[in-house]
Amino acid sequence: MKALFDLLLAYQGAAAAVAETLVLVFLRVGAAMAALPGLGEQSIPVRVRLGLAVAVTLAVLPAVPAGSLTAQSFAAEVALGLLLGLSLRFFVFALSTAGTIAANATSLSQLFPQAGEPQPALSTLFVMAGLALAMQADLPLHLVSYFVVSYDLLPMGNWPRAGDLASWFAHHADDSFSLAFALAMPFVIASLLYNLALGVINRSMPALMVTFVGAPALSLGGLALLAIVAPFALQAWFGAFSRFLTNPFPWP
Image (cartoon, rainbow, N blue to C red; front, side):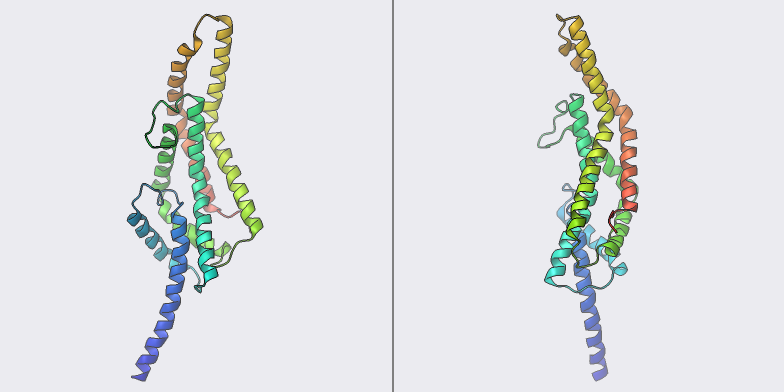
């Protein structure tokens, strides 16, 4: 009987260690789920997101080292989870910003108004198409690998260095805006050429109301340009997104 109690006590200690590690992994994954693209969208019900967080936690748990649950590790894991989620959310920001730039350049920002939506229809189109591409490319499986690799460079319960965080924010913000402007560049160039042509026509025929003639042409040209450019822009975005997943952490 004593041997049985000793065995139960031994298993209780092991179970407690596994439970602490499980909680720490869930803190990182759950915090990241608030910002993850695809799985963490606000349109997904909370219960579904919670179930996805639990599923990803169980998939990541066997590949991470054991950890001890303390107040410091609790706060560190939540912060690191938000950091990991924002790393991927910056790519969604790039799509949204590119759609806003393209809509403003081609006068399409108010053509299809979205009630209650703070972004134009082109931003919604780019974001939804980009998320569909990511999910089609097995994004959940890549996220499991993403979290497993994160424990090698961001150990459990340890805060990253302040210099690394500052470099991370500057690097990702710069890349996000650069990618957004590159995706919207055809629309910006088309808008520039349109305005130059409009100025020349206005100088040659001052009596003609060129704005009323050219505005519909700009909107129609913007829609035609969208149909041509969108597949290539989304392909370029998905390539940048895939390259990030293969090397997500710039610091050693």
